Every structure is written in C-alpha cells, then in structure tokens.
Image (cartoon, rainbow, N blue to C red; front, top):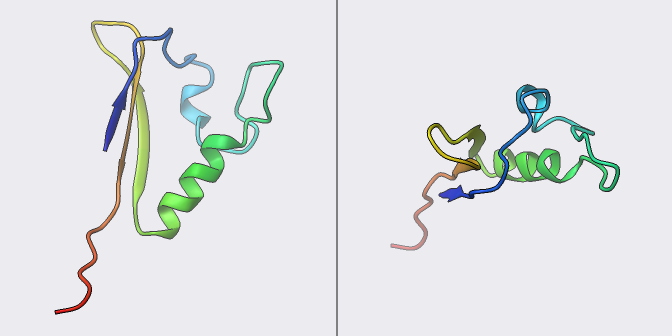
Length: 72
C-alpha cells in the first residue's frame, strides 16, 4: 500500500527516527502514532517505511503485509 501526500514533507531531523517512540517536533501529540502503527504492521509480518517525495512536495508512506490463504 502506498499513501502519498503533497504537504511539507517529513522534517529531516525526524525522518531517521520517524517510527520510534516520541518522534515529534510538534507541541501537540505524543509522537506515538507511527510507533504504534509500525508495531501493529510488524506483528502481522509486514513492513512500513516513509520518504520525502523527490521532485515535489510531501512524503510517501508505504507498507506491506503478507498474503495469507485460508480455506481451500
């Protein structure tokens, strides 16, 4: 899954630790949302990552989850 926005992008100071606890430079919020998101995705065998968009504004978040077959 890919989610792309056209906002201001991810601060270069935050980007290396984006998915760690308390990674924020804002006055509101806890900095736990992406940490929890990563934990949930990894608990299901997936992976999540993010990067600033190259020749445009914003950032792109991507995650993968494994396919699981059930039934026949």
